[in-house]
Every structure is written in structure tokens, then in C-alpha cells.
Image (tube, rainbow over all chains, first blue to last red; front, side, top):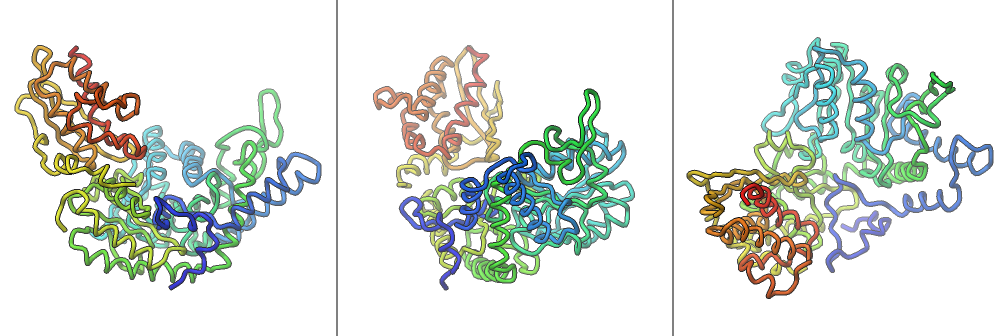
Length: 408
Length: 143
């Protein structure tokens, strides 16, 4: 079946190692459509100036583009107000902002911070640091045998002492969708706030912050067609208001005296220094592009590819798959290993066929320890992938063991 | 990319055989080497007496390139004094960094010359050098 979106992505037209590129590392970063590349180009070609500063036309235009992008994000995630959308460089910076501004100020000795064992290091290490600094306890929600978070585990780990629950909506390794609504319900019942890492979910299905009633959402632009270096922190107004600034400097102040400073209101309070306006323009264009396709279509394509890929992978006796393949909780991320072959060798051998996958620990050491593996291979799909890409993956995988002198 | 130039028979054989992958009975030095970016970890065991590496072995997890590189290194250094081991290290790292390219200069590396093509694969260089850097740290106090 021809994919009508490939033509929009210049990099997908270029060969890799002399073969057509089969890009299956979308969990790491996605490719960029021409409309996004052009939006960034247009900004720098036509509208570049420092927003919020100058009283001249170009600066006003730059401000319009930047604030317009904020409104685009607001509508995209269903936020009540545009000033609840803070631009950062990526999900990692958003999570660090939360750890330092919220965690370091509102967590006390004896409090509990709850995360899941499937967290990316970016939603794990900052909380480990907060817990160490404040004498709090970092508790882990573990997964069942197929990688899901159960209600029993939610009820067991979130207690009256819990102040922060920080969880990923979709595991970047297993691709499993976590029950955010159940987690929010339990967390709010004990007065804890909920931080959702949307890096692997926001690009793939509709995430509505008000419908989910989550307190904070973070995500990266570059995993959803945007340039690198632009990301988002959404937070409820009341929480963002009571948090002190994370970075201090220009544009985040109200007034500065020799010994005192009053801070700007939201969102400027959290956006010190000149921001990535070109990146914001790119992010807005990416959201528009996704909007034109529609999440219904994106989800349908990814579900078709997963349904096509899983039985083919299962038919290879030397492949081990990790996590549930129940489509109701699974996105287009497939973690697997090839018997006797290290993931890095798998990746190198696939690369020779133009197939790009990720190999390693996926910035999730504790999850690897929990799964009892040192590393895995990961193929992660997006709407511009095709069944033909899956066929090439399977073909290439069938050669891997032979290259290293093992029988099939 | 020609895979046969990377995964040579020699590399495949060292990776599969595991003949140097074991614990020593009484090692005098045990040192871990880690590749934080890929999660690979080896533990190098040496029995050094009077400046001579009487025996060596390793355990751990890694890709074929790191496993084969470690195994080849152990074959080279077994029975050698630490000064000679350092010469192997310098030559091997020089080969991977493409600072030493003349085959005559590389001859002392014996089978480990099979890893020369890794110098063309920046993504895999760290796999090839892990055990050699670990050995260098392990013997630096023995010289």
C-alpha cells in the first residue's frame, strides 16, 4: 500500500548505505516534513528578531510567531490557557524544571515520590536527586509480566505520604500505554500531583490535559516532526504560579533592583533568556501537519503496522519480544532481541541493509535490570512507515545470525 | 558497507568460542570496564606476578566486536610482561585511531589486526577499545 506521506519528508527520499532508508528509530527522533523545515526557514529568512523586546515591526512579528506557536500548542493539548504552556528545549529540560522548581521546594523529608520502573532516565534521575537532597523516598511502580502497570500496584505504591507521581504515558522501550487516568485518580485522592512524560505519547495519539486532569505534561518537539531544541512543559496555572523560577535572567523579570527582583507572570517567569523562536515556529508547523493527517489516521496506520509486524517477528524462532502485544495498550514501539547476538551487532548488520533501529539500554537502565537484559533492539514506527519497511526489517533480521556464524 | 570486512570469521570465532571467557582461580587484579552509552560491561581478570601477566580471562556482556576484541587481547598478553602489554595497547589503540596504519607496525597484534576495519565505523570504535582501556588501567600500577 503506498504511503501518501513519504513524499513530504526529504530525508526519506535519500539512500542510506546505497539502499533506500528504512527509518525505524522514531522513538529516538522523527524525521521532519518539508512544511516544518520551511517554517523554520521562513522564520529566519523573513521574520527573525528578538521577540518581546523591540518596539519595531520585525520584533512584533517574531513575538506573534512565538506566541502564536504557544496558542497552537495550547489547543493541541487542550490546555485551559496559553500561559500554562512553557517552552523549554525538550522533555528533559521540562522535567528538570519541575524537579528543581517544584521538587526541591515542595518536597520535605519523609515525603514519597512515586515513579514507574519503565521511566526514561530523564524522568528518573532528577527525582532521585530530589529524593536524596530532601530526605524523601523514591518509590517504584513495577510492571506485570507483560509490562503493564496494574491497579493493585498503583494502590500499593501511592500512599498518604506521596507528594509527586511522575510517570511516562508510553514506555519508550516497551511501547505500552500506561493507565494515566487510574494513576491520576489515585494520586489526587491522596493529594499528590501527577507529572506525565508525554514524549512517546503526544506524537502518536490525542493527549488532552484537562480531560486527563493531569497537573503537568512534558514532551519534546523533535519526537513529533519538529526541530530539535524545542519542547514543552504544560502545568496547571495554580501550580506554576506557586513555583519559583528555574532559570533567572532576561525576560523573566518584572522589575530588578540592586538586591531584589520581582518576577514576570506566566509564562515568561519560566522562560529566561532569548528563546528558540525558530524551533517554536517549527513545532507549530508540525502540529498543523499532524492536524491535517489526524490522530485517527496516525493511530490506524501504526496499529496496522504493529498487527502486521508482530506475527512476522513471532514466526522467527530466534526472536524474543518484550512486553504485551495487546493492541489496546500498545503503540508502535517493539523491543526485541535476537538469540546469541548482541543488539549492537544486530543494529550494525541491519544498517548495512539501510534499516535504522536503536540498540542499547534506551536510557532506561533500571527497566533493563528489571527485564533481566543488558540491552535490547528497538524498532519504533511512525505514520510514514509502511508494510514494506516491516518486510525489510524482517528480511534483514533473518540474515543476522548467519553473519556471525550461527545457524538459523 | 561490507559486513564481511567487519564480522570476519576470526571475530565470529572469538565471539562464539568463549575460550577466554571464564574466571581465573586466583586473579591478582580484577577490573571492570563499562561503556555507559551502550550498557556493555566486562570484568577483566589478571594474574600478574613479578611484572608478568601469567594468565588472563574475562567475564561480562557485550557485542561481538567487544567480546572478540577482549578475547584476542587476552591471547596476546598471556605470558607477556606488562611493558610488552602496554606496547600491544598502544599499537592497538593507534590502529583504531588510524595513527598507525602500516601493516608491518601492526604485525605484533596478530589476530587482533582483524579489528582494523572498525576504525572506519565511528559508532563501533568504543566497542573495540573497551577491554584495551580496561587493561591499561589495570596494569598501570604494575609497571
